Image (cartoon, rainbow, N blue to C red; front, top):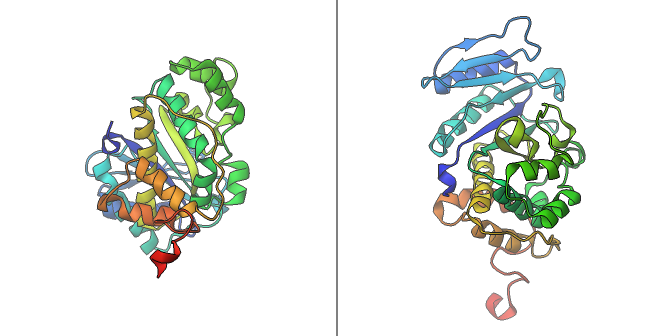
Length: 294
């Protein structure tokens, strides 16, 4: 499975501009008109039907000041990333911004996943979770509430039961067989949200602090697609958690990114943004040797 073949969607939270202003800005990029929601819609949804008939939505979010303006994309393909970046730039151009309260959620289509490959994804992200959190600079408040760490009992259940089907993963995730998942189920608030598999048909990645930097948004999407593709392609995965030591984080994360397939010029900016916060050398695990420095 190539990461470029996976479909995805993105939710981008913004402040400082109204939902109607944000919807108008989106329409200047994707075409189509803006349709308001009417008085009965508690999300005050503004919709933009783009030139290809896809629906972009702008909704209120109770976690943001005055409800903010959360952009919900339609289902997108890899080739749509440049257009999404133009949307992000258009929002910034009208004065929309991201605050500490804002976040970005990226959904990857879970259609190709079975129990084994969902387990792979859980183990891959758990193993590198500390390093991922450092690299993304996940805000402490977000980590405590909206993007919590993977529950160790979930990983223990996977290791003990070795699930092959979605139903088996479902039972491990919820602690029982949940055939009627609800939107606001308490298990959704994790950096990797498997509740979304049964509620929306996607794996949701919730780590990301809000941003209207188009390059970072692209890098975050490529990172999530690469994680999903790695899980789908791997025969198995290890879950023994690695401890980030701070001194070699940049090197270790670069190795991780290359292992995910984020190699070459196509992913150069993704690597740049994803490693920007980390300490150490990207080329040398323990620092440049003295003879090399000389």
